[in-house]
Amino acid sequence: MALEMHDAGPEDASIIHEGSFVILRKDRIIKPCRIERGKKVKLDRSSFLLDPLIGHPFGSQFEWRKGRITKIFEEDKETFKGGSSLAGFDNRHLKDDAGKSQKLSQEHIKNMQTGGLSGKDIVDKVIENSSSFTEKTEYSQQKYINKKQKKHIQIVTVVKSSTALVCEMYAAKGPSKVLHLRIDSLARMLTLANVHANSRVLVVETTQGLLVSAVLERMGGYGKLIHLFSGDRPVRMALQYCGHIPEKSKSILKDYPLNRLNQISQQMKGECVAMETDKSRDSGIQRKDLQESTSSPDQTCAGEVEGGECDDEEGVSDVTEEEEDNNTCSDGSEEDLEPKEKKPKLRKCLSQEERELRKKERETRFLESQDELLKGGFDGLLVATRFLPQDIVLSLLPFLSPSRPFAIFCQFIEPLSQMYSSLKETGQVFDLHLSETWMRKYQVLSQRTHPLNQMSGTSGYILNGLTIISE
Image (cartoon, rainbow, N blue to C red; front, side, top):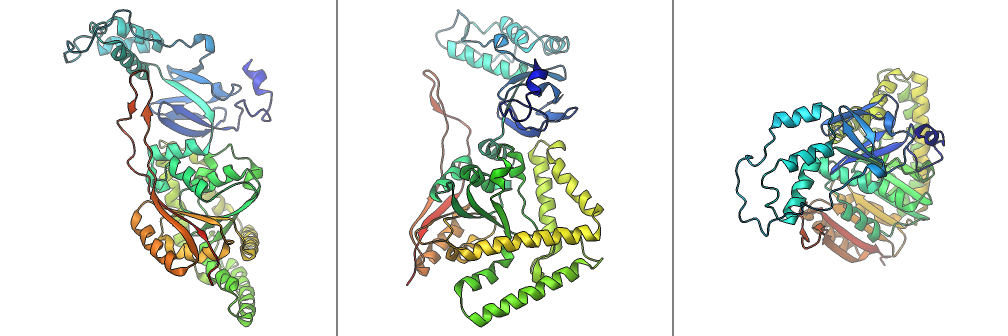
């Protein structure tokens, strides 16, 4: 049956097939992964092959047992609806007896695990041999059962990738990699910037591509999105994790380096016609210099930026650090970063002609993005970067149409408070708001509804407003 489901082909989006990008979830542990036959992954303390996942629908659950996972069918799902029929009135008589109330020893439990006993049977044995279980209240019994189930029943759920899950993964494993951008702050930025289909949006971010992925998901493949990046090339590891975003949606994404923004800003201001003529002549000279520099054998494989405005070694080091950070973010497994690991090998194997061709193609894409920027009239601006955002925002505001929203995220309030005063003085914006995003999760159960004991305190600050035409 599994083979028939797999033969349905990749056009069936509800079925896991070879090459699918999925999210493996075990309680609060989230791991992105690409399905390949013979590929072994490690999730928490369990490692297993991905072959049994192929052919099953998304949302399927698998139980890990003795080094492999097996599908849990609906008829096999047995959950504990409550505690024992015997329950205490309260827990005042319970004492900390250092585990003496449990008759089974750790060695006995390990022997049951190695003997192939299912997790549910082990939980039943543990409850049966607990002398204090019947003295607990009904709620305490259910809490005890849930604790033992998490320990002895290792269930892996396979779900489709989404920006929300990727954001949750970074928040749990490495929040500093995405500037502590939480899912509520991300959603609020998209709302404040009014991101929608058929809009033209500018994005400046250093959040591993998380903000770009969220904007692409919201726009649905309609409109224009320009990602202004720092360094040699954009780093968008989160976009690779978001395998649910189709190529049609990614086709609206264009890149442009931030260090070339000054020349476009001067052209947008229209300071002098002669100056614009000189700039076009200089750009032609710089392109010739760029082509001549590519023919030099002393240059590295990384693409140089015209005019020598960007240090090549600096740009390459940015990418390398991000790759190492992502390696730790995904439980240290190498399979998650296979696309990233192949890139340095490709650079070493490329011939000089292939390098020149790639640089010309990259330069062509940059020129297309430059033409799009020169048109102006963008509908929104989103900024979430580790750099001070004030100069970046002031240089990008002229590209927005009047009465268009912008949203700037920062982990700290000081840069945004300074920029609040600076933007007020320019007279180019109005309706400025500086706010802190805050979210609190609740446990909702019968007679046990209360806030969770452990949660993140803050997710940064957002400065938003609207543009106007200054007189």
